Image (cartoon, rainbow, N blue to C red; front, top):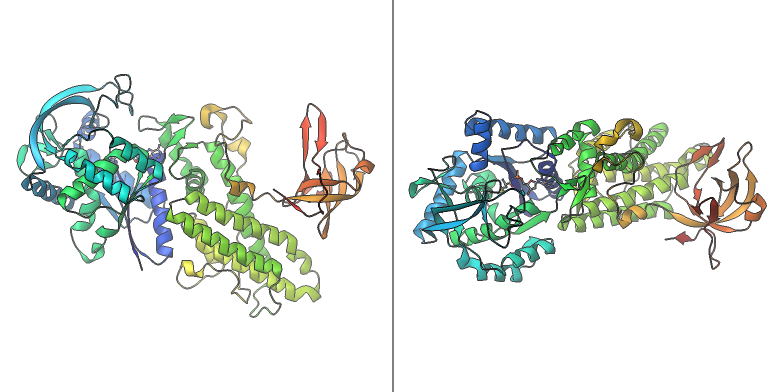
Length: 632
Ligand code: MSP
């Protein structure tokens, strides 16, 4: 059993929880739930960062004491995480005695060891970031982050000899390529370190700021908020006790890219100087933007965006954040894209599968022992499950939630196709096919059971409902996520309305869409991962017969051959092609579309055609290949 101690940043209490905070906390939660599934000892820490000038200022503006203000917002964070089903083991506040004690101990230790000295420094300061900026970092005389004017401050302060650790840190990063992940952020830190590293001012005079932890060796100063805040990760587990024993050596941090420098430079040098073992890994994710502009606490719509959790459900919101962001890169948030994902992936792919499969199984009832052997199609589902699990395990090593979900959705696609191809509703009509029907239902129950486990980190509510419908007993573990061992059909309750479809026109007012693009605008998230494309099954089909659909100018009813299978398909090409001209031709179809009825004719698939200013041109092949061949 390995030990896994994961932290989120501790969030400032100058703003209520918003989408950005939720993103990191949800990622951490998904990871911790996954590691628990693996059977690891997991400890998950989050909390609030409560000292510093910024908090003192907002509290004063609200006419409250900093402590009263911090109490209120810290409670809002706690409550938000509870509501979202976040499974943190601890919630640390930097105003707690357990934290202050450790901060003072570490400061004293560093002071005694000569790692801290008293000196004077003048520089350009951003009150928003609570840090000095070097000439190189300043953009147009302003803070690069807040785009606000900087203030020149010259004062006497205590300094930590950070510069002394520059060469050591460079070597550590070179020797431990996975210390900071993904690579781009490791390179960014190495980039900072190409410039001479300054010593770090770790105090603020009480004449200017009282809201902080007093320096143990000079009560006219309080601790600089970053020096205080970073130590939360350690103070939460260093205070002893059985629950936290042996955790520190396993600590990994998850942060957004905005706070890379304190975590990638200050923190390891602080730990090194204090003789505390370094963290194992720093995982850095990108930033969400809303309509192209970077989100920050000053932008009210991040809070508004966060309210979508209630509108569309926690699982849908969580799924969107995890699926849409490529770990390490920035992503764009919009209600429209969220609804697209909800409708396509959750309602259509997963919701329909859960509903169809559970309804079919429930209609036949339990079977103690399935006698028909597994056929190739059943074995393919077992293989697809093994592949999804392998992708999941590999992706989660890198915090690549998007990849993990892509793998699971490839599996869901395979099972949906399996349902279509094995047509259990048709098998049920023929008593002679009962053994095969039972085998198909067994495979489906097995597949649902698999999803009930592997979806747990990402869609905890939905996964719970699936497990409940299957009457799943026993411990929830990743080891149980195997398809192909089940030889019975369990009693299953119908799963309905797992993810109801959202009517896009009615639910997303144009103004709420990203970038306020108008009705019918393209998805703003742009590129899709290959796994999305892989869900579309394109195949070569041969037209066996074609006729007009009565009373329709546009539609042709085609009988087509796809490999062994013959099916009926309706194509909107009647204005461009005479039926007879199509017979014998090979075309390309989308083979895994849900059936749709057009002018009373059921269509099973879609023929691909290009169109331009009224010209319609069917996609055909420039060399002959058999019908049923895959197109990719
Ligand atoms: N208090 C410091 C962190 C101290 S950690 C020892 C702080 N707090 S914060 O409230 O500003 O939170 C910053 C973090 O919130 C980011 O690192 C990230 O985890 C999350 N996010 C805030 N806005 C975000 C986005 N727009 N997009 C993604 N994550 C964002 O900095």
